[in-house]
Structures are given as C-alpha cells and as structure tokens.
Amino acid sequence: MMFNEVYDVIVVGAGHAGSEAAAAAANMGSKTLLVTMNLQNIAQMSCNPAMGGIAKGQIVREIDALGGYSGIVSDTSAIQFKMLNKSKGPAMWSPRVQSDRMRFAEDWRLLLEGTPNLDFYQEMVSGLIIENHKVVGVKTSLGIEIKAKSVVLTNGTFLNGLIHIGDKNFGGGRAGERAATGITEQLVGLGFDSGRMKTGTPPRVDGRSLDYSKMIEQPGDQDPEKFSYLDITKPLANQRSCYMTYTSLEVHDLLREGFDRSPMFNGRIKSLGPRYCPSIEDKINRFADKDRHQLFIEPEGWNTCEVYVNGFSTSLPEDVQFKALRSVVGFENVKFFRPGYAIEYDYFPPTQLKHTLETKLVEGLYFAGQINGTTGYEEAASQGLMAGINASLKVQEKDAFTLKRDEAYIGVLIDDLITKGTEEPYRMFTSRAEYRTLLRQDNADLRLTPKGFELGLASEKRLKRMEEKHEAAEKFVNFFETQSVKPEVINPILERKNSSPVKQSGKLFKVFARPNIEMNDVRLVESVEAYIQDNNLDREVIEQAEIQVKYAGYIAKEKNNADKLTRLEYVKIPENFDYSQIKSMSFEAREKLKNIQPTTVSQASRISGVSPNDISVLLVYMGR
Image 1 (cartoon, rainbow, N blue to C red):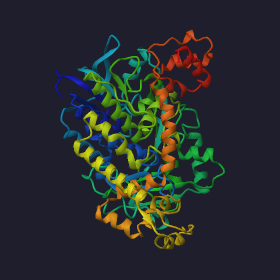
Image 2 (cartoon, rainbow, N blue to C red):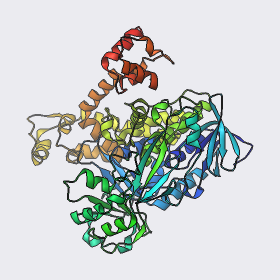
Image 3 (tube, rainbow, N blue to C red):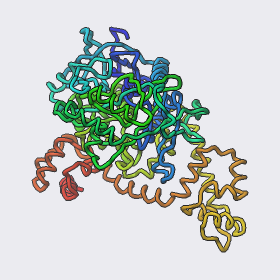
Image 4 (cartoon, rainbow, N blue to C red):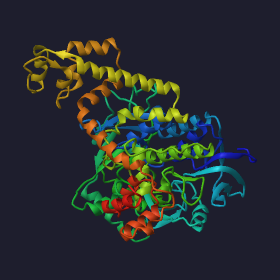
C-alpha cells in the first residue's frame, strides 16, 4: 500500500466476496486496495471445503462466465467433482467440487498478487471517512486514514463477532481470529439499521482416527467435468472419496444431555441461524421423529488428515460433542482437531441497498456478502463481483451494471435481497428462480460472457470460445432439424428403449425430442456419430445441443413468460417518488414502497405486502 495514494476502490475484507470484488475492480482498470486483518487467510474456507452445489454451482459458473476467479480456483484446487441432480432435468444439474482448503486459499492469493492495479494492506479497518453523505476513505485501528473514491465492505462474520462453545463465549470473527469493531456503531449512527445473525460450523477431526470401512464411500463422478469455461483448467484425473455415516438415537440422547448448556436453548443466542443448514441440536429438536441423520465425511485436502464432519454443525460444549461423536459408526476412536462452534455477528438488512449493492444512505459505499444477510461462499463471491464491478464503474463515471431475474441466478439473489430483505441467513435454491430453465449451469457463458467482455472482465479468448461453442451447438441442432431417418434405422433403437416405433421416415429432431431418448441412443445412428466425429464436437457442445432439442418447448415457453414480465422492468419509477399521495393504495403498500424505493414497477410488484391491485393503482397514477 502507498499511504499517500487516493485509491479508486478500497475493499475491506478478503473472504470470497472481498477477493472477487478486488479482482473485478482491479481488472477493470481501477486502482484498488484490499485491506484485511490477516493476509495469510485470503479466501479462507471458513466452513466446509467445497464449492458449488444446488443453485450454488450455477452461481459459480456465472461468476466464471463474467470473468471472475471463483470457477478457476475451484478447478485448480479440486479433489473431487460431482454433477448433482443428473437424474433430473438440466435446470436442476448443479456442479460441486470438494476443495483442498489450503490450496484454494493459496491459488486465490497468487491470482490476486498477479492482478495489476491491486495493492494489499494488513490491518483492521475501524471506521469510514464520510463527507456530505459520500464515502471518501477508511480509518484503520492504528489511526491511519486511507483515501478512496469508493469503498466495498465485505466483513463476513467479523463485525462484533461472538463465538459460542457451550456455556463459553468470546469475541472472534473466526476460530483463532479477533472480531472487527467500530464500523457497525458508526453506520448505525449514520442512520443504518443493523441486526444480528448466527451461523455455525462442525468439529474438525483427525482422519487417521476414523474407521472408513464402516462407512459408505461417496466417490466423485467417473467422467468428471469442471467449473471454468476456459481451457486453462483441466478435469480431475484422480479424485479423493468422501464417506457417509449416520447419527443414531444413542447419539441424539447424548447430545440432548448438553441442551441445558447450549447457547441455542438457554437463551444466550437470540439471533436466527440458517434454516437450510441447521445445527445438529436444531435437527434433533425440529425433527424429533427421525432416529438418524446423515453425516458426510469430507477430506480437507489431498495430503492433510484433517476431516470436516458435514451435518454435525454445533455450539454444544466440547465434551458433549466429543462424547456424542464417539458413538457414531466409524468414529469410535475419533480425535478432535477442534470443536464446532456457533458465531453471532452484525449484518445490515439489504433493503438499504440499490440493485448495484451501493447503499442508499452513503454514496460510493457498497456492501457484499454476509454483511447483507446471506450465507455461503458462492452467494458472497457473486455479490463481491457485482459490488466490485459497480464501484469501478461509478469511479469511471460509467453506467451501472445489474442483472435481471431472467438473466442470472446472481440477478435473482440481489433482487431478492434488496426487494424482500431477509431476517435469517439467505441461501440460494433453484426454487427461488422462476426462470430456472433459462438459467442453467451449461449456458452461463452464453448468457453472461458477452456482458463480461463489454465490462472488460472476460477476455477476447473467452468470448471467442463461447461464440464457437454457440455456433457449433446451433449447427448441431440444425442437423437434427434437417436430417431424416428411416424406420429400419431408428426402430431397433426405439424398441430397445420401449418407445413406439415410427412408420415412415421423419426428422431426427422429432425422435430425439422424446423424453426417454438420449444422445447416446441417437449416436447409434451412423449419420449422427459421423457428424460428431467429422466436426470434432466436445462434450459441452454435445450437451448444449441435446438440451436445446429435448427442452425446446419448455425453453421457448419460459422465455415468452420472461419477455412478458420484463416489460414492467422498463417502466421506471421516478426517484424519490411520493407514495403518500396515492390514497387509494393500501397503507402497507405505501409504507413498503416508501421504505424500499423500487426503481421499476416490476421490482415494486415483488415486494412482500404489495398486491396486484396496488400495482394497478400505481400504474394508473403514473399515467400508464
């Protein structure tokens, strides 16, 4: 860092959100400073050693398509790859990797250090410098003032973080690291609303003390894929297995013995935790009818013996954790590396943000990650990317960059946060996206790489690769639309799949569109296999063409629905619109609209408490 430098963008915090924000801003040409309390923990995987999963895998591919780094690092540090939900439709397919925790952080740091325009500084930021409702820099715990044209806060769980283990608690933002203080109090003094949330993590154990022969092996995919669309990373040649075991009634009884000492049940933790990743004590309490729960045993890397016990997140006393885990099959001789714990931290309800993730109260100040009430590396990384992009664009006096709900899961995530807010840690699911057939993991590059290229994030090489894939897939689809097949050629294939035979020659597209006919079936037709070989089609192109053929009707219908609703996205609501004038609108709607200040009628329609009738009244009042 240069002490007399006026930076374009300062990013506070170097977790997943901060790392993506710093990379994006710097790669877009902004002079950027990344400030963190510990440079050794850049992009630390604080919880499980994995990236992706249901809906989260789609987000990682979207980050990669835009030119972010999460997909590349996920590939270079992966120890196992799985495509989840492969038995369902392609809208549900979700890539996931187990990561080498140490390599993941190292690869991120090396990528950031190799990024031009990016400086680093290790210290705690204790406050912001604000003049006339505009951020102009940050203050550190040593009293140093660093000037900037914009600031991105990505504080994770560090803002007044409080760690709980049984009846013990102490300040901390992560195991072994101190909490960050000062920022919350300053922002509340400026008029921001803040709240408290909680999350938790399981114990880490010594893999050498486990009996894997008693567990169920969970290997990776036989023919693994990868996250990044670039060819600089390669699919895994070797993989490490995970394992699965179960809790039991005996384990549950042992855990219940510690409930009176649990901060969750004795009232010391009042904040809400993630609904969809509950602690083991919460699972026992909420699902009392279940006599067992799954535990996934995840290695932390290629060479370490440290193991993550997924499904056993807990804040119970360490002696209770240890005693209960020793009753789990395969854990009879378990040794602890460290106990699980819960952590409470400050967040700011995200309805205080614009779609760009800039705060409404302070110009040039952006929030990304858990400070917005989200949970998960992927959700944080995508917000960091968008905040870094918009902070850079603002400094360069260019138009802001946002994504709509039919363009990306990232668009759904941000719109959900700023329109609906969240009172518990927000997690992305495919069910949150009304256009999930359009927002598949396989086409994130087709949707977003042109946008990333325009921003200056996605390289020309990346754009060219995407265009070649798109063209090759379109030509392959056209081949199916124009190529005829005779009954004597196709019927033996159809009969093997218990599909009705055809009586006359017809286009391959029609046969291929049948639900139970797959690419491997039509490749038995000589002309199809010849086309693939002659054109040297890779897996991505073949998969893309198959989806376009088999789901053409669904895709067209969803696109039509999106186009209809998108019209309301273009009906802008004037800034500082006075809703109090509209007496025929419900009081609740007026209050919600006044608080959130939506920018479009479409966004207004998604606010909880705003009815279709209220929207009709608004449109009439606006002369529409």
